[in-house]
Amino acid sequence: MLEFLRDQHLLPFLLSVLRLSLWLLILAVIFLPLEWLFAVRPQKILLKSVIGDLGFYFINGLVPNLLLAIPLSLAAYVAYYFVPWRLHAAVAVWPLWLRALAAFVVGDLGFYWGHRWAHEIPFLWRFHAIHHSPEHVYFLISARAHPIDFVFIRLCGLIPIYILGLGAPQSVQGTLVATLVMLVMTMWGFFIHSNIRWRLGPLEWLIATPGFHHWHHTRSAARNQNYASMLPWMDWIFGTHHLPKQWPSAYGIEAKLPSSVVGQLMYPLREAREETLSDPAEVNPR
Image (tube, rainbow, N blue to C red; front, side, top):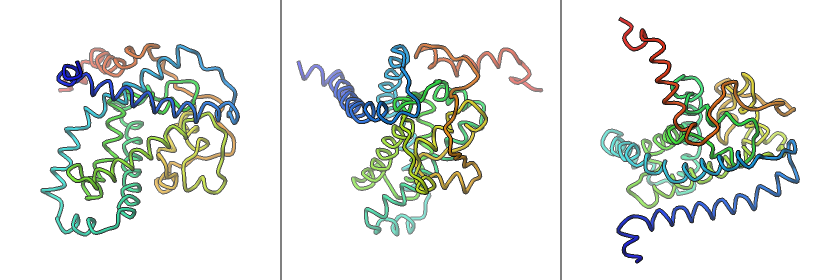
């Protein structure tokens, strides 16, 4: 029976679901009590919303890894054949902690620009809008994203790491560095989306907090700021830092998205098709 499951690739799938379920349990044990004790504002999450958030959590835990394989392999190929070998040789002798620290900064810089482009480029915003549509913020909102949006922003963080030789899929150490960076950023993503009123004082200029990221989800133009995943000073450098003392009064976006997970997955493609049909000049401006 086990051999049949292995041949049909069902066993790896089930193991992935089990792994995600265990991580979900850990996240719930950590964040649910904290959000109850230190809530920014007490809120009762509707069951329908939670079901949708869980749907996106499992989709983005399973699908993106399949979509990331080819572009990351291409990035590794470019890094190997086109980036000067002296750069990679110099980086290779760094201690693991230094490579991980450099990859952490480079990855967050890439994430910053990928995230910013997702707001500024209309086509990318159609996908990213799903992440901003909830009118409440709590830890699972971190995983509520379209897989295409999820993959694009993650690629923007990973590709520079591979190009610079800070991480490489063909080596154990290189894979470890990239994996650690993504793991830390992913876990921190759940924290900054959480409904926890913790502030870190002056340290908020060095490390992202819920207070920093909640303003990115505000139902106002201020959401086009605070793009960094973990390093707010990047927003300060690029002129997009916004950190008042108070918390946002409302979250979400003006557009009304479908309520179902399937409807939201199809929303960006449907919107693109409707815009094309409504304005034929955009298809063939000549």
